[in-house]
Image (cartoon, rainbow, N blue to C red; front, side, top):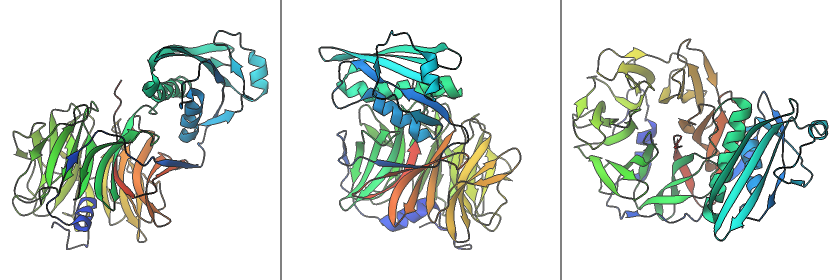
Length: 436
């Protein structure tokens, strides 16, 4: 087992490993739905809130999915919108909007739409109008079957979010996480709101460190099913997977390069955890640098030229940066004596990580150009931060009221969501990329 014995630091990865133990697992690939949905609780509001009304959509019902309800829930979860009641109004899609009436109700924006059914296919049309400027901002038409209706609603919410805020929405993206139950471990993926969970892998032994390929088609992760840590890559559409790193000692902490052609990994084949790169198929192993102490948890910068990583080379666990080609590492974090699990924002300007302050593990954010730090969460045990692909939110695991949950915070810490499940411990989250 790899630990930072000099400082008492045991990284996120190794704490999970120690808790899980090792042993022969019975792993089974699965693509069926999971039994437990994640429940969402929201607290706080954004610094700016846009007042919007979402009218009921006219036309056919789409079974169990209410398109406007999903849109309302998405916008509410962002903390950046204030929902104005539409009073149960169902407006014809092509109706003339009385801008003044809706503005008088307090709605600067109004979304309306229709759902038409033809056999098993649905056509969803929507419009977004600006009641203040008395103009139409957006319109779109989507088609799909019943199982696709929720995704269509998320896509509409994404369009509304982007048209009003100027930032691409993430409601139609997905998340990955590990669920631990009394029967073992499950690697699951779900919609960003925690709905529609699907099991990618079941195992009696620990699964850790899932990470999405840049195109969202694959997951890399560490599994202990063979009695030791092995890095696998799994194609989500087919459930096919292959081991890409099974060297002597620990194989851990996979991180995809921005173009998906390489991964950075951590190996202890020479006795101490060090960072290597490999091709995405596991070939062409190359050591990045040589350090007398532990280097772990690499993450590529968006330009693909550097790695951000955790090391205790300075006497305590801190975050460093090194060129992918190798060279001298530069220290990045200086606040506090314990900073681990770095993740770089999609624009390369910010860094989130786990910091220990007054005995509590919290999520912190740091501007890479100035070094200014902000604490985003309160602890006591927040771990595994992962940026949303638009950089506006951070997903992480947390212990709240004695329960293991997933949580989301806005990048200013003002808005928080809790995604909890009733029948197990949920952890090791990773937010997936944009896929369309």
